[in-house]
Image (cartoon, rainbow, N blue to C red; front, side, top):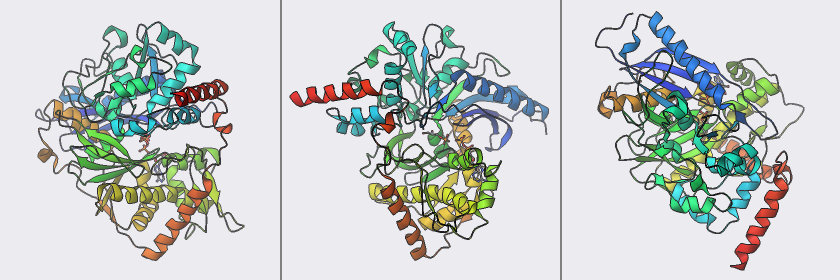
Length: 541
Ligand SMILES: Nc1ncnc2c1ncn2[C@@H]1O[C@H](COP(=O)(O)OP(=O)(O)O)[C@@H](O)[C@H]1O
Ligand SMILES: O=P(O)(O)OC[C@H](O)CO
């Protein structure tokens, strides 16, 4: 079908943890062309996880090229694309030289736990308990700051650039925008608040870098000496520049959202009280809390949902580190199958988990537990246990953590959700979604078009260039063909399952001894000595 002259489209770069995609959406929110590419996952030591920043850029460029080819083969003209939006994996930390635009180290991925000792050291510093009120996040291995500090301590290249005043730090959005604009020659160096809020440098109330946060983290290296991206709104016609090469050369980048915020936008979670849960590599539940951030007292994060017009909207977030990556672990590490949907089929070969509970704490446990000394642990193995039970327990682990997050959210917000919208690759698993409904006791609503993350970034860019002018115009977008999973399990049975999970979580605490969490870290000894010195000095004051 060829485009009519008044048909307009918006492109969307979706740079996820395991793959990059480029999608082209029409005004009705339907994707008309897509290209996806996986890229290399680098695991140099247990608990370490890296990406090659240049490979990420290349994969995005390939995706744009691939999708445009499909688009044109369908008879559309690329001139009908009005803007491009970007959405990305968050927290993943890239460092580069401002002069050359070359990366100085592999990107340290959000799942990486090499900074466990550093996180402990930071927690022991005076006033560490005051940080969450400012930035919305607790100290852990998860936000970018611990990864950046680790790089400063452990990479000579990074330290030299720092000393010369040439070190740039950014999350994946900032890196992509910088590179796609042409690097140092244009120097478009920006990030939006949904991404900047994941570094621990931003004040969540003002959406500006916080002097207090910068002071707190500057005890060994002066963070102000590092080039940080300017924080701009999530929808902006000019701030993100334009593509400098490829089939969309000179097309504007007009929107940017961290992937979980983008999914909330793509699910049209614009009203306070609406929520979505995205089952991708990890799983992230975001609950719209309106125009003021809510600082959790139950293990959740305060984050920015979006800032389209200077009136930011906030969300409470429950982050789960392992979801689809657990499925991939069964495929790649244990050789259970070659396709994700086969893991669900395997789980369907057994009638229940057979007493098996799998705490998939490959990166420690995130929300609402924040246990960084846990590792993946299976409880309840007997002669009865077969591969189907392991597959089932892997899917269930995400559902249990989602239940714990929803309980925490209810306590923080005082509201009970009446339904939960879902998306992401793992939401393809009908068994997983039914289990989720059974465990949380509310309907699970899955849209037919599940590229909601990419749609969210397209909406941000589309708002900036007025493809859509208001939320009302999006009313019909992605409403057709939803599947609703109603809870079917007896409440008592569901409660019993969850109790067992909670017992398993308690039992896996403290598995990792302090020395083990530092293995592979060349500076572990120094870290410990420095931390001890700092503590001694602090206690003298
Ligand atoms: N039918 C399925 N059953 C279970 N897991 C699935 C299924 N389909 C996809 N997945 C999982 O979903 C994940 C990919 O989801 P996606 O939303 O693309 O993630 P990301 O954006 O983090 O790269 C993979 O880990 C994959 O194993
Ligand atoms: O790759 P995803 O979709 O699991 O998302 C990664 C998150 O942004 C990490 O915070």
